[in-house]
Image (cartoon, rainbow over all chains, first blue to last red; front, side, top):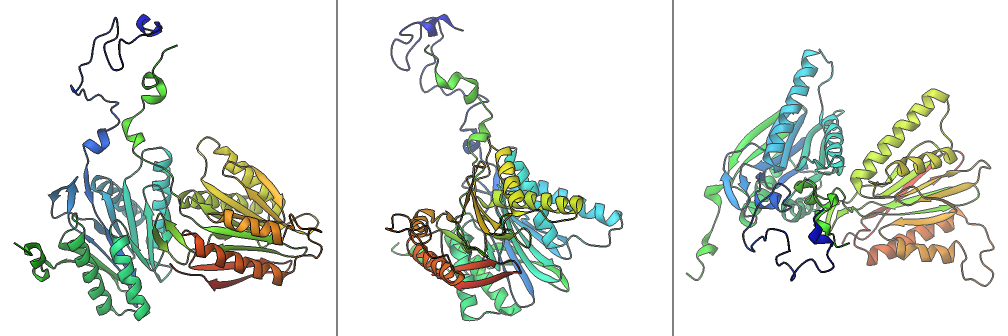
Length: 256
Length: 231
């Protein structure tokens, strides 16, 4: 150990030079490996809200296609939603790299099942359950997958909608949202359900579009282009929608 | 010795680890009351995180065996893991011994499971209810690291500070001139649970939406629900 540190009064003044050591001049920032601010200084690409809800014939789930790099709109055409099997769709908010990693793992799992001649396909309930274990394990190892996952599809022939986040917190519900969707979309969906308990396919699609539009207006990391998955007993249908032409930004010019 | 803190080993870990919190508080409240020949376990059905309501019908009660029920509140990620492990251990036990585990044995097992994670605890408040060796209703209450206490009534979770004093007074007969003289009836317990939850939902944001009451007797487990305020 350095002898100077054992002196009764080692420093000449607080933050000042220490006898027998090199002086670090203030405001000369030396980024070292153990700098605790590293993560926030260099954010990685992330996606914003995911919205999903059940309706009469099945489940609908949507996520926009923007990948943000901090406050920079970095990528405009990124997938955040994919079909795992005919009975399970996964959509993620959070770190895009982690999403693409888990997507690869799931796709390989599904291929393995297929090649092994499995009689059962991976359904949404099983995928959701598996994800809770993977994400909880990673958080316990302090190496989390930075994700908000929404799993939609069918479980034992019934519509299923489940959520898992980076710490392994998981639940099932009839309407699920992540990110800003919790504040904007959930009240809209619950309100629509209070008025009419069973939504038809058309009503569900219209509601989803309205949810994504409100998010686009209010969440600066949201995008006008979005993927929407409709999961029914017949299978999974994924569409890409865009409502840019419908939006009204007159208010932006108000007073100018 | 003048050794500054930031140079010690403890403060030189991987940077990412400081950004991430492995715990969340998902709210939830439960009450348990035991009588001579029954036990009641009730929990609210709100799942929350901060000011957000994530679900309005999420029960915190888990049926472990036909005679034993568990209620877990706190960090939902830990609740799910703990109950999953516990259920697996009970299934293993049932297969090995060809009988279901007794309430007292489950109570000890739960304490052991919690203590295994003493230095990275499950952030969970548990209440376990069932019957003891004499067939009387029992309630076990736990702290997150496995301290266990056998009782006849208790509250836990978000609204514990609002409900426990009520139970101490009306069920335990604490600070009463003669204490409690009559035994607890099912009807009395149910009304008390109802009033407790209605009062807690008035003042505590993590409690509300609805409540499920399970009543265990020698013969069966019955379930009933009532609504709470949704704001």
